[in-house]
Length: 335
Image 1 (cartoon, rainbow, N blue to C red):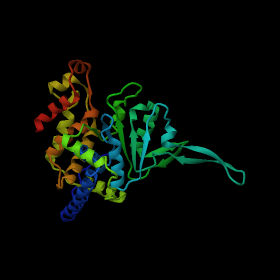
Image 2: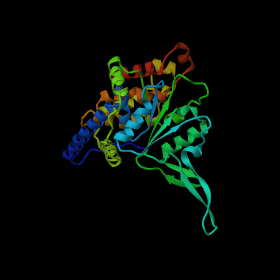
Image 3: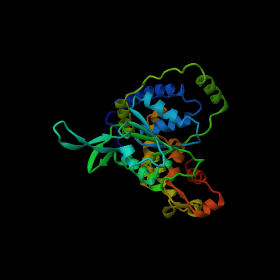
Image 4: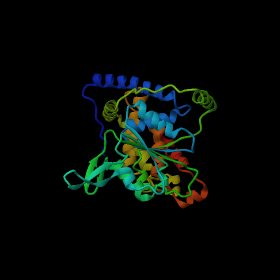
């Protein structure tokens, strides 16, 4: 995937599309806000991921509404949504599908492919780190290639296709942490924290009554794909491009002079991080109703985009240095 800067031939048409999409996205956010309380940053970052055409890894302790968020997004965006609970005994065929031997009325035998839950538009991979590396790899291959290969036959996945995976940072016993090379398949890593007191109060009142208000679709899958196309057509200024390059390249020990990176980073983000940051910055500008991304968008999204694409050295872990502290040091020259 190579992201190119495309400037619209007719600025008037582009402005009209941006304004129309901005109104639609405002309605989407308002509808989600009636169900998800106190997680506006999480909602926005997840929406940005979908608008950018990518996948997200949601990390948070149990009970913070991660499953509820995915279900709500599927309903509001009009997507075919499915959920898979990852467990140590889950096999690749349980996700991708398998072939079964059938016999026709004429007595002829043949194989028929039965599709697995991955054949949907929005898949929730719940606690992805509890499955074996073999099963993780099967899903992550589908995420990257948007196709499934079974018995030598390729089966394309529906469009759009997005995976929102969750991970519990507390319980590590019996888990299989995702390798860094596979983490790179996720466009963003979204940290899900506890809600503020007022938001939690509203949640208590809204969710413990007799019934909750039903959600109606605000967008369709076709409208989401049109929005993803618009994201790629959004113009990007040279200053934003240079800021993305400076930020990503400064996180690589091989191409930086920043002392904190040289001491604390084992390896830095690759070109896919630059692509993700470019698309995410465009999507964030659209959500906020702006016609082009700014350096502020790059700064706001640097953590979710870079956090899972960098590895700390042994010395950094021994000193108690966190990856967020390193990213804060990288963004300081741009602030």
